[in-house]
Length: 302
Length: 303
Image (cartoon, rainbow over all chains, first blue to last red; front, top):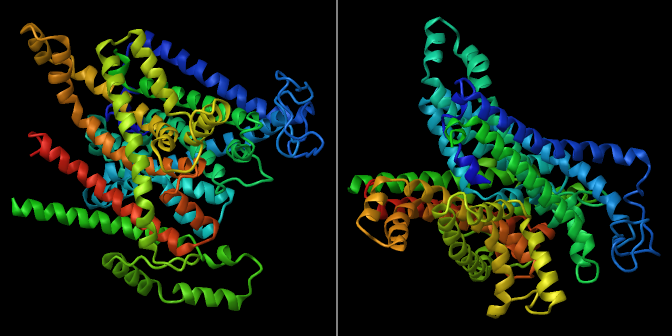
């Protein structure tokens, strides 16, 4: 995903203001709509389904019916459509419950990275001078550290929990976002409307808050949606390694971790959550790419 | 020239210092590790004893300077569980991880670059779409899950390849392919983007007009100019690969650096974790610098 983030050109913010061809813009809007719709439906489904009472209790164990195959295989039954896990838990119910936590982590994980990242990036790009030099150096150093090293350093100290997971996501996610918003803020700063505002006597803080930040919204939303995908992948990797979400909490990554032990005789325990992660991350990445294109006049013209 | 080299070295040292300090700050500012190491039942005396053993009872600044001195002299402390110098243990594992990262990168380049070039030369074609789809998929699949599914198919179901351990080329095939997918997707995407821009340049038309074969135009004239960003990504991705290596080494029981890191986390071996983080940070800063040097060496415009 880093390439898409790195590839955001400085002009993308300008797109929100220039009168780009209407028609192309509309087709892009519909493609964004059709990409976002399944994700919204999925989010609604994982929230509503547990309330209906149609599903089993995701944590309920049934040691008489462990590792039952899914309904479409020999020996499967429709009472457990996707089979059961190592302790007889219903995989479908776990998938729904895990989806709830995974989507929540994806969404909040993106927010905690994008928020500080944007503020830091805009500060550097708009203030320039020594502030920019210092922040840019820190961004470079941060980007040089792979996420796993930061995760190891924090988790070795704090153990595994949801707040620690968000801390890791914030620490690893802010830098790419800061780099992009910095370059956009830098180009906005030289635009005539900003000079005009300055000449008219608007305070710097007001210019940034009321005029620069609103022009960044499109870019930030696109970066944010890509970051949702990254956050879900990071969560699943850490939970899989036993450093993220731990039982009895259920996330798709934690489900994968329990599927690893029984892989050779019950593939469905690991296969379904993995498919779910891949599908959601793929959708989110497509959505992020569509949003970036939507914001980028250069790509839109093609 | 001497001046430029000195500035360059100075900049590298500053970045190294920041990265190493970040590793220290991450370890210290995120709290007191003794409760995580000893568990919630430990008494205060036990905690104080451990704090003294780890040197955490000293003033923060003293710890920081001791730590810096250790890093400079190559002393990264010793492990709580193995009673061995951390650096030596890390060095014992490095060849295995290097093998994995090297093989993965080789596959990623050998598949990703031609795929990207193919897509760029036939823009909008079936090839192009297939390459884009593959690249997108490669960036969305959790690496370790791909590893599990490959084990399931190739080792458990068809019995073609070994599922774990290391030692022979056969052992390397599955983990290397698993590692390769993400950088391959990245490289294919980037190669396609840069190549399709390069191929629009007038000098490409000129080369064609001179009657050169398509292969010569694409590879000798086109790719030569597109190769620089690709090379950059290859070196930088080698860094990202370590993140993937931890999960892949876990899935395939590969005795590399990632396994060591996981063991260290599991046994709350705080000094070893920190040593691995510092070691990794230094390697990645140096890799980043290597990219810049390659740019200067290859591209006369940067000089």
